[in-house]
Length: 145
Image 1 (spheres, rainbow, N blue to C red):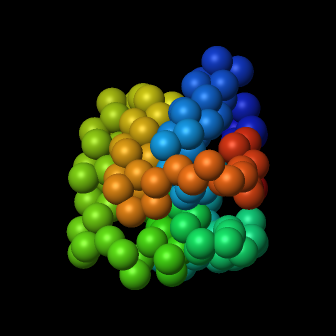
Image 2 (cartoon, helix red, strand yellow; image 1 turned 60 degrees about the vertical axis):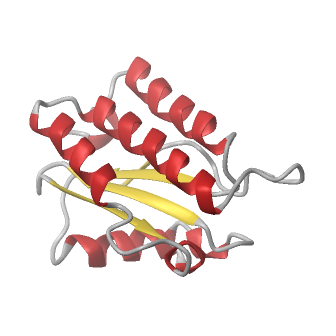
């Protein structure tokens, strides 16, 4: 399976629209990365992708990566240092539970949209949208092998 063809055009659009909509309420930057498989620990791989996508280079260090590995059936949500300094322990747990429920039912695009939406809502509390905010990272889904 080519991972780039996993989502339909409508699903891709729903995911990128969810990112754009979530970012209207926060200065945070949200990215989604999907790949087929990886070796090792999911958080290590997500951290590697986070750096590869230069997400640590945002002005407020408030990038969020939602990482999904299809064959491994694993995913992770990680936030940059600016977020982790401000949020309580377990900040991502509610989002991960909502996404996991959708993924278990095979609704991967719906799970990502839900995770993006909830991430935006939670980020708004700590990183509200600023009038001079600019979109520092693309809203497009990135794909690995």
